Image (tube, rainbow, N blue to C red; front, side, top):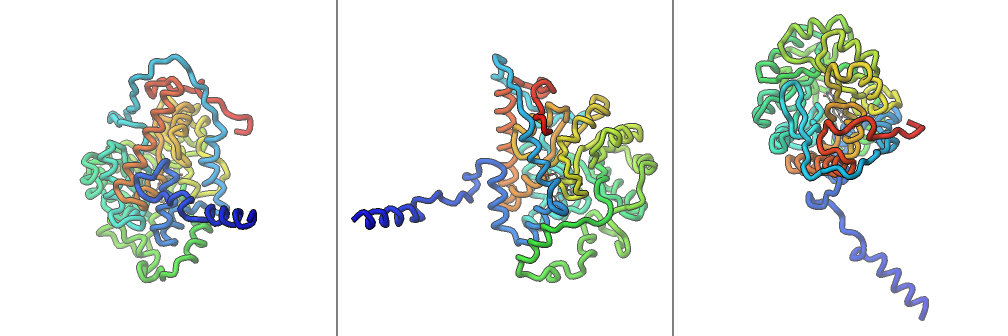
Length: 385
Ligand SMILES: Cc1cc2nc3c(=O)[nH]c(=O)nc-3n(C[C@H](O)[C@H](O)[C@H](O)COP(=O)(O)O)c2cc1C
């Protein structure tokens, strides 16, 4: 009798009816991580792997988000937080939140509307978007979808005349800021991507028949013969920043800075801003998170030029902590692409909504109704930071 009852209970517990329903609709998404699982289920493994990968053991990739757990907030009580102001001004333009969409390449690999869907979401949520040089939509198309000027990221090609053409094209499209990425140089070991590729039954050659050339046949390279040309320039040095600046009147922001020393060199070379970034753990395996790099960069150039940061930002509290440590604005990469891959434009919008809502909660809870109220004394670093 007892055995029969136990069997019946076991049967009930194993029933799918008692299990949590799979959370895979837009309404089910509670935080930005929820989008990743849905995105993974929808994308071909090779494409998901391209997005998910870091380099080597993915230590830097994971360190970026893990480090935020080693920072604790020090909430202030009895502050009137009935009205919040999350706005930030960057180079004379006011944005509603300090959250921006990082340049992420080839977004049509994640959704048929790619960068255009992301730009429409950025427009609805009045968020700054920075477009990759190797995007699958042109700067003109994305600016139109965004309804206002976007920032253009630059990978300088191995031909300076081509680089100049890309810069001038972005300026003509109305971009006020050129974001020059300096943390990708030569080669990288993307093992996670390779492992995901093995799960894909499709043949890469079907969609990418000419390998590297497919990658170089991007809208920003239209009209350029890319045979023998690389989208990266391995010879570029500090000396060349002046040349790059001379191509346009756009502000020049250097993306991929990890040390105060390099930040100072950016400033001395005429840069108008820096992004503390390690390419989302996709460049060198430094094992160091961007948030750990931030204080050094802020003490070197903070207050003189804007210091932006990206990498591992997954919660509103992460944004709060980065702002407290001196960042002017924070970028997200994978989270909005998870939203894009999972649900297209509405997915990107919801990712932005969630992060904004979480930031607002953090501001209220910590007694900081405006971004300027968030300061270094509102966080403490754990001894292992
Ligand atoms: C799939 C993918 C493609 C990327 N492509 C570019 C790019 O073309 N140019 C660039 O400067 N950074 C690129 N990045 C780096 C992002 O701009 C950003 O630094 C990084 O994603 C932030 O980390 P997070 O993904 O943890 O938010 C890319 C990142 C990912 C995940």
